Length: 440
Image (cartoon, rainbow, N blue to C red; front, side, top):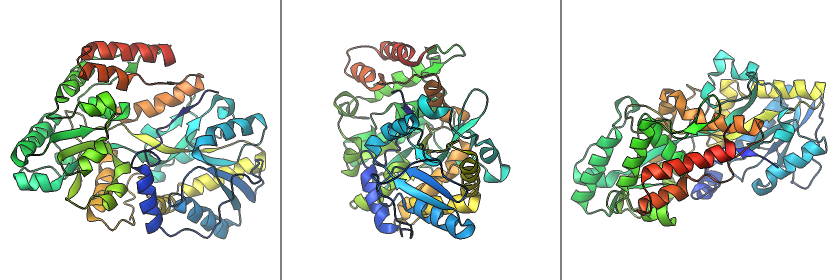
C-alpha cells in the first residue's frame, strides 16, 4: 500500500496529546454520540443518510459533532460520525475501497491511489469567493480537480521566553508587518542569553518541516523538483542550511537536538532557553504547562520572504459512491465551508482556519494562547505561495504512486552538525534521497 499523508499537525505527537487533553476540558461536546469503530460503517448512503469518517481524540472531535448535529437540525440529513483510531485509519480506508464500502465523507490523514479516483471534485466549494479558502493548501490533480480541502492548517512559528527578553531589556516585534529577519532575531536572542545567563538562545524542532520554513524565509526553495521531477537545491538554500548548521554550536543552539534527539520543547519549557522554533500545535499545551515564566508567540522572521511551511491538519474529502449520496455529500461540504459554519467548527475544535478573515474566538483562558492564535491568523494570509509547496507536492507524489518513506533530512544534517560531513554534502545526500524515492 502506498500512501502519502499530510503532517499529522503534531496535535497527536509530542506536545499534541497534551494540547488535546487541555482542549477537551475547555470545549463543550455536541449532542451526537460517536459510533464505535467496530460498528457498521459501510458506504453508499442516501440523500438523507450519510457516513462520515474521522480520526481524532476527545476534544478535537467537538467541532465535528457540533456541525453534524446542526446540519441534521437544519436539513434533516443524518451524518453517521465514525471515529477510527489513527494507527489503523489508512488501512481501514484502503480495505474499504477494495470492498467497495467507502464512507461518503471523510477527514483523512492521507491520500491513497487505490481510492483517489473515487474522490468528488470540490472545486465549486474551494473556488467560491465568499469562502476565502487559501488556494495554496488545496490538494489538486493535474487537471485542476480539487481532491480535498483542509479541515484546518498548521504552521511553523516562533516562541520566546518573554520574561527573559524583558529582563534583558531587549525588544521584539509583535506584528507580522513589522517582523524581524533571522539575523536580527539571532542577534537579539544571543544578547538575551548573554545578559540573563540562559543556557541556549534557541531550540529548533528536529523536523524537515521546520527547516523548510526557515529556508523559505531566507529565500530558498529547499529540496525542490523541476518540471521533469528532478530534485535540486538552489544557492539560497545552501546558504540557509549552512547558517543553520553553524548555529548548532552549543551556545546559540544545542547540538543534541539534531544529533541525538533531545527534546527541544522540554528545554524551552525549563525556562533556560530564550526561544523555540516549533509551531501552532504547541500553543494549547504551553497555555497549561508553562507556569514559571511568561511566554509569547512572535512573528516568524522574514529574510526577505514572509513564509512558513504550512500543512493540512486533515484532508476533507467526499467519495463518489452513488448519485444520491454524492450529491448529498457535496451539499454537506458546501454547507460546512460556508464561513459562519466553518468558523464554528474551528472554534469548537481549536482549529487554525484555512479560510481568511474569520477571526475565530477560542476557548483558551491564557492571554498568551489567545494572542498566539490571533498572530497565526494574521500571518497566514501574508505567507508566500512557497509555504504550501510541500503539502501540494505530497499530493502529486501519491497520484503517481510514490511516497517518501524516510526523509533523509534529519540524519544527514545531524551528521553535518556532528562534523562528519559538510552541510553541502548533507544537502546532496538529501537531494539524492528525494530523487530516489519520489523523483521523475
